[in-house]
Length: 204
Image (cartoon, rainbow, N blue to C red; front, top):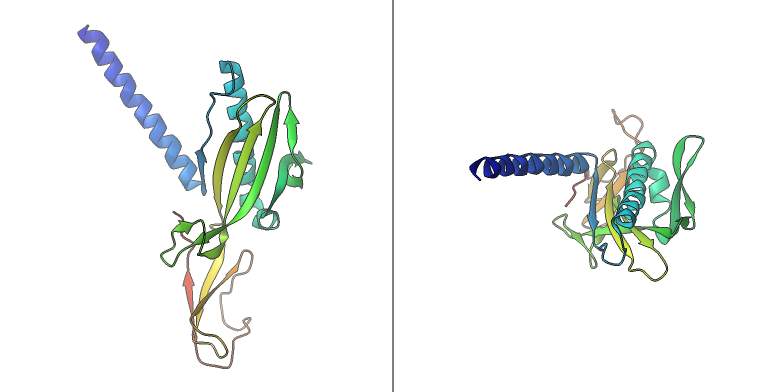
């Protein structure tokens, strides 16, 4: 009994390490996802694994697309159904849903709002152009939908805060996903007084 208990404790510690490493890997990649559905409506372990792979594939593909070209994520954030597929070896986004066997995968990308503290909120916030929310739904006839939500963050964006410009009050946030400036010579600066403040995107 003592030997079995020691083996169980060691095994549990290893599982904890694996889970911790998995969570860290997801966060460092700039994608946070949350499964908000369940497998209860999908009968059989084989179906559960297939559903999980189908949903995870979409999250992985969106992360690859995000790292290659944020513009493709940004241009599909209208909330319409889209699908991910490979074209000439590269993942891309097209309109519509994808059916594989019994299951249909529906992906919806939407804008994300943050409050004045940078916390993600569902309403009464300011759109964050560097963060998008993807909702992946796996459905099948006569079965409960399985839903996964993923937050996609553009860590490469350049942000500046605009304050005290002529004709504007308060602070405005401007973001460019592909443009950076090493000097002021290439920037169209206003004639009125003010200042630029660089800031990195934050995620919650």
